[in-house]
Length: 380
Image 1 (cartoon, helix red, strand yellow):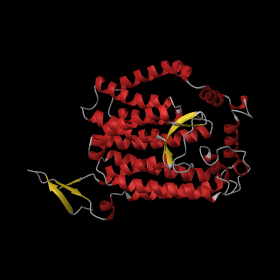
Image 2: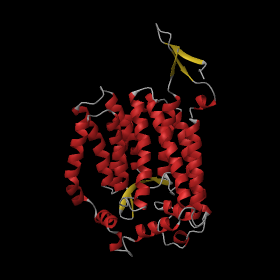
Image 3: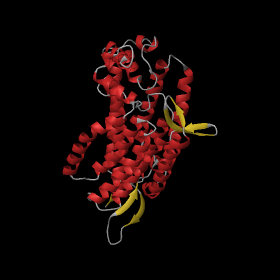
Image 4: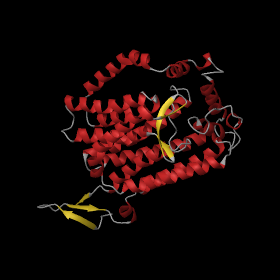
């Protein structure tokens, strides 16, 4: 359908820049993405009721957080992509400043210091960097000619390394990996030369012994447990053994909603947070898991379409990074619960019980919708 509302005509050309008319254009929301997110959130609340031991309080609190997330999504969708590009440096400086503040005056829990306490609530500044970092790296790289030169690429890696190191210091390995991935995706999508990628992979492999030496004892234990969970079945290996037992016992159709023995009898720890996919596998079986994966795949596909159709390099890099980082969330969580990856504390997006991470993810989708709906269409 040809849009009706002309924005402006390019001088000396019969090409007109237009914006589509209609409800979705004026609200700057993408209908496909919005419906998929609503379906995912509904599925998440349905599963959470069982995973939380049928505690309606968890469901209500999660629904409120999702509502706040959708509000943030709608607000951010109204801003134009060039606004995000202009604000990226300021957001990056503020985010790094907050991460430094966490190390100095942050609030600790379970041996980690990751939060800042404000009157009435606490928040995790590292969540902000999940959006600010790819935004900053994309703004820096697209300020210059693509593919990036070695100097521009090196400075982009410095921008990536600073918040990643600060978050690892908290320590929070899972979040630091996600944030590093968001920046790496921007770099890869910028058209960096393959020979540089192979060199980077070689250097990363050579740096593994050094990384092992600076890891905390509990982080090392997670890796060792991943390699051999049966070595300590009643201790460090308990979580992964129970999660695999729950997933395997569900079969094709599952034991039925609210009927899972591993989750309902508390054999499965953290069943409403990081290990909630095991509850789905046990109660809804492979069918339930495949339905969830289908929703995730459609969201990822929509995000990649938005990235491919973006009108400028900054928007393409940012949309691609947001979408691929969302994929990493899903891949890492399912991989660690099924024993394919070490446990790093990454939640299952929109399904695991949580607060700040939901709002952050929704904010990312708001930016995706902004990139989609502010894209001006060329017609002749």
